[in-house]
Image (tube, rainbow, N blue to C red; front, side, top):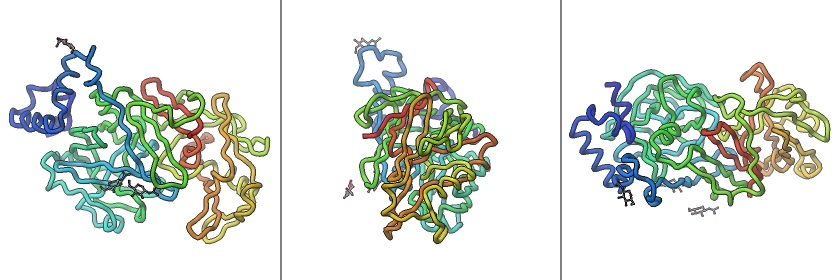
Length: 381
Ligand SMILES: *[C@@H]1O[C@H](CO)[C@@H](O)[C@H](O)[C@H]1NC(C)=O
Ligand SMILES: *[C@@H]1O[C@H](CO)[C@@H](O)[C@H](O)[C@H]1NC(C)=O
Ligand SMILES: *[C@@H]1O[C@H](CO)[C@@H](O)[C@H](O)[C@H]1NC(C)=O
């Protein structure tokens, strides 16, 4: 049964003989329904010279900002489509959603995928254990059609959860990983790689614009970059290890003084992490410097004091990326000012590593270029 996993747009032209006629018919119907058949046939007969109208366009996928803590978008899985809210996460590689086989607490409050009502579901069955900073998912692999807006990805491997620990109150049902394939469960192809390989997107790039303090307006661009979302020129930074979106950082300075990363370090650009995360030792020193006090498990500062706090400057590839206090301090719903700096990267890697999460990415529009293995950063509009 495993060959079913390669069902899909490109597989269709490569493995035509392997697909029974009835299957072919269904696929044709599905494609025609979506007015994609001509598009697909054009693209796969190699005549795209003057057919700009047939050339795939970049996709703008809206994201909703939940209190500056998570950016969540809709996808659907199955036929007919079952809709899920997912976290688009550059810091992981797998796609998972809760399933009807899950009886854990987090599954009571989230949308559950039901394979029985999807005509395109195909069981793989391989068990999977996914560990995130904020929880753990135990499940098994399967295939189904995944839609991100108008993009249709047939036979995409994904994980159906059987048990979930943590993320109970998450504003999303599942997570869609946008990391390199080595970050995904072995033997599976991440969604972006499928879109890229099947030429469903014009370029092997994606980009995030994360809005501040407003629910609407954030966007994930797939297959291109809309330069109206940033100011100045994009600065390209080579990816230092093609696993996470990892880059080399020169130093971190506060008030003109090196604060960690003094001999260079690594930084992971991660839309799935809300905060700025560094080595505990350095973050503890930073909290002390800004006078943050632990109240109810959160580091708080007096709101009136925020304008006087220092800016943290991240130097990357010869450019400075300042993060002012208004960005690394957030106001809770109760009006309390909390630090959005967290420690703990020493558990991730032996060498000094920082995670540039949403705190950083709201300030800097980010582009992820798989063709040239580089990250682009520029001040967001
Ligand atoms: C390719 O497309 C052009 C423009 O649409 C058309 O004139 C030409 O006949 C096509 N060639 C083939 C081989 O289909
Ligand atoms: C997701 O879908 C729901 C309902 O279908 C819609 O109300 C919501 O605005 C969508 N979210 C985004 C971020 O587009
Ligand atoms: C966000 O957009 C939705 C519809 O797309 C609208 O109903 C809502 O009022 C908007 N929210 C804000 C804060 O603008």
